[in-house]
Image (cartoon, rainbow, N blue to C red; front, side):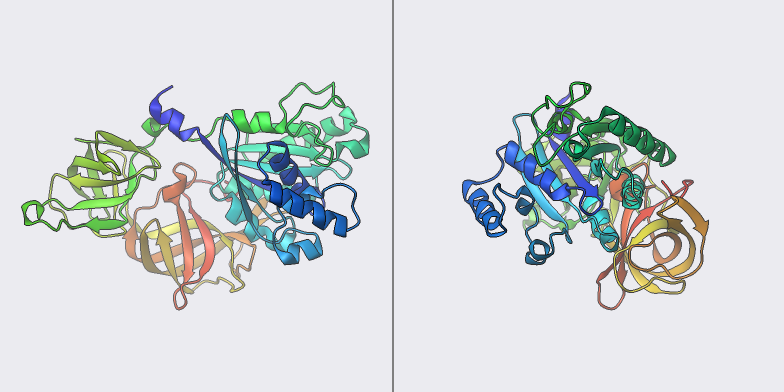
Length: 428
């Protein structure tokens, strides 16, 4: 394994999703508790709150339901990020809402995840919200799905119940184009198969949840992806001796860059070579995603914040027409003719919604031609006409440079999260 592969595999970002009362918050709390990722004073506060509710044992769901409104209602209504580590891997967990009206929050939490943990109540099986969350995860390019069949203790750890749910979910995953699904029978309340293997499921030979989270292959090999480097800042030297040596700071979004590589600057299309790479601790021979560095180029080219430095032989084609799937995050509807801002990487341009062309039915997982308004939580396809060309990649191939945001052109607030598409169906 190379150094770059080791670096990209140290951190797993994953998102939880499930219908209301599937026990998602309890599962997350159990995971944090059993990996000893909870501070003593935090656990003591949860125990006090649990006793105040008349409970004999600590309600581990309170470890994640941090908002006061959530604790009062007993539901999760916002994305709660949790950070924890084991000896094998570090984790960033996005605990997302289960209610239908908070689907947009689930999209936010899953947008950077590499694994989606979808919960199902063993008593109820697959429900509409399960399908909705699986569809959203697939659309967002989440490569790995883990199905947590929870509350197995309430069905006497029946293997047949588990197998039936797994078979149905496998069909859903296949229809969405996701082929990496691992299903785990567990009880978050009792801790069965969360961190420790359960004696109640002798028929199950797969990993515990934590074992799977520690072992799932994540991250990309930078050597297999084309270079994408959005310019965030132009650094101008203060010393006249180096007045021709501007450098361009940012984070490598995809791929690998070496000194001497031939690159193109987009959207201008100018070709040059990388003269030097400056890291936090000094010069580097190469850099890879997601390192933050400054590049110095061999030629004096007019480069500004928002430009994209890319591999010369694998660059995206800048265009003023952008087709994308969007999830509406705002209460403001999006309709044909709307004036918006498009933020792609570090570049923001004015745009017009040329047409709304399709909308996804999250119950049937089918898309249909549609030219009406897109409302909050809707997922649909639209065409944008940009005031300036943008070099967007297909989201299905390069996630970070295929993503974009639609912003209100007056207030700058976020209207929708978008994913640029080429020849892909709306279901991703």
